[in-house]
Amino acid sequence: METREAVIIVENLCKAFGDNVVLDHFNLTLYKGENLVVLGKSGSGKSVLIKCIIGLLRPDSGRIEVLGENVPELSYSQLDQLRARVGFLFQSNALYDSMTVRENLEFPLRRHWLKVEQKEVDALVHEVLESVGLEHTADMMPAELSGGMRKRIALARTLILKPAIILYDEPTTGLDPITGMEIIELIKQVQQRYQTSALVISHDMKLAQTASERIAMLIEGKCYATGTYRELAASTDPNLRAFFD
Amino acid sequence: MNLFPKNRAFLAEIGNLARFTARFFREAFRPRYEISELIRQCFIIGYKSLSLVGLTAFIMGLVLTMQLRPSMVHYGVEAKIPAMVCIAIIREIGPVITALIFAGKIGSSIGAELGSMRVTEQIDAMEVSGTNPFKYLVVTRTLAATLMLPVLVVLADAISLYGSYLGVNIYSVLSLRLFIAQVIENLAYYDAIPAFVKTFFFGFAVGIVGCFKGYYSTKGTEGVGRSANSAVVMASVVIFILDLLAVQVTELIWDY
Image (cartoon, rainbow over all chains, first blue to last red; front, side):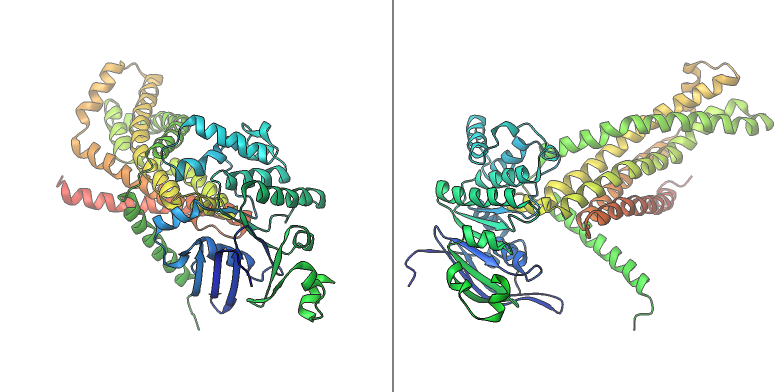
């Protein structure tokens, strides 16, 4: 029996695009301080799940409770307040091309906290850049950075508001294995330093093995199984073996 | 069976653009107002178009005068060249040509910028950063285009008339003061005011169409290119349609 507080509860989540049913009564719970990896094949609906959780997509039915708030029922301003406490790392990093790294980092701060002093902003920018080991990049443009550096800056941008939960959308996709491992280590360090809960969606088994406390398997729109890496890897179910073999 | 798939897609596009425009008006009057971004966009859209608009306006005035001259000389009304050119430029050629150049430069750049922001999830990132992307991106750009095109047209008209003055002086001698006096003498309010008012609509069309095409861009980098291209084509067609309507409305209001 889990004694920790649940920070995300997804119950009977359904989402379809036309005739294509992506999520079919999907259930999931993320506990406080936990690193949960949702594993699934490409196109299985992982990104749809995470976008429903943050309110970028509206589910057809079901309940999504994030930090005690039912996301589909929130107004735009309530959703903004909730999003200030939930970080989102996009698969494509989504750094603003027309802004420097510093402006990218300041953007969510200035939008969520309307009255914030420059000294405070500078201190936070320095802190998050130091957390991701890229203090020297503050005045560079995103186009001047490598793929791994962009991912780190995107992570720094999610950290700047000190979120309680971070949602990672395929954080190692498109990176070489060494940079991928660096990002995995960074995810673990960030969790320890900022005491965040993390929901990571991925198809990367290395990430699932090294960064997860628990894994949820997303197969055919449902939460097919949950457990630790070791428990799932020991399963004889052919649907699970397809991932671990 | 759908017998007219293209017609249907066209009507769907018009419907979506109408919905997008309605959303613009809903969002534009509701706080929070993105004033600093609006000012930044006015600078980008207005100032950065100035050199291109200025150059084309100058050539337009000069060439129009040189092309008109043989016919005017033939009919013995060479002295009426400034009057004819100024009416042509201020009523029609200035607003329409400037709007078309504006559509080419600004419409395509808005379409490509928003399109690439859409396909690289920057618009979603903005939304999770406590920002209404429609207000921040669409309302500011459309308003900036609406406000800046009239300013550009006034400047283009002035530069174009200067080009015309130089064109007249290639073949004969006419002082600038006399040229301006002839222009003012032959211009009426109903030449200038409707022409100025319609430029707000042209600017709005360029802004809203560019944003519409970029905001709903799909299919990766190919989609971005298509958004930029179709923004220019659609905005240009809308400019001509609005011009046609403007003539009809002006004739109804001013009975000349």
